[in-house]
Image (cartoon, one colour):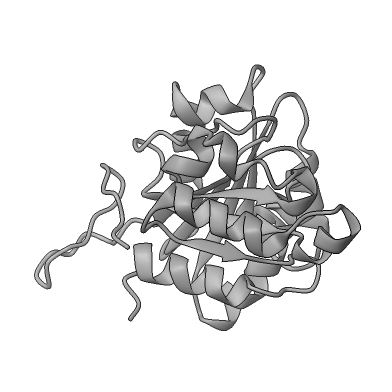
Length: 221
């Protein structure tokens, strides 16, 4: 897995005194797929690895996801920024990411040494794709309860993301989904791009997601 490059990522030479700017990743997916729950599970995992990070959430006219993270006690509330898109949240991560770029720049200015910024998109469809002016690498989260036909629909989110996460694996027997079949279909659709099954409620699979992030944008072995 290789990270996309954009103007925000700067890896200096040994003689270059400029600081390394934070890697920026996106997490998108439909409403209820578990994006915020995944971030909540990732926070202690990233902290345990000594990664200095912050979060930017996107929504229409609320700061609900940001407030949920701030109240969680998992992360310094000052490290969570909220972007109120005022329109479709996908527009501000795809067509005009300037609000998010500004939020990321503000976090970097306030927290020197920041290594990673996670941008969470508001969710409502299967088409969310992040502008590569905004993020280096992005995750798309779908969930078993949304139906095992999601990979067959070949939506842009499923096909284009750097990592596809299939969440809520524990619900498969309760919603009549063949989990193995759904994962196999997702892997067929994506070719060599990775797919990870998770249960954000219990934390299953979250370490593997953190591993993928670290390899892709933090250049960990």
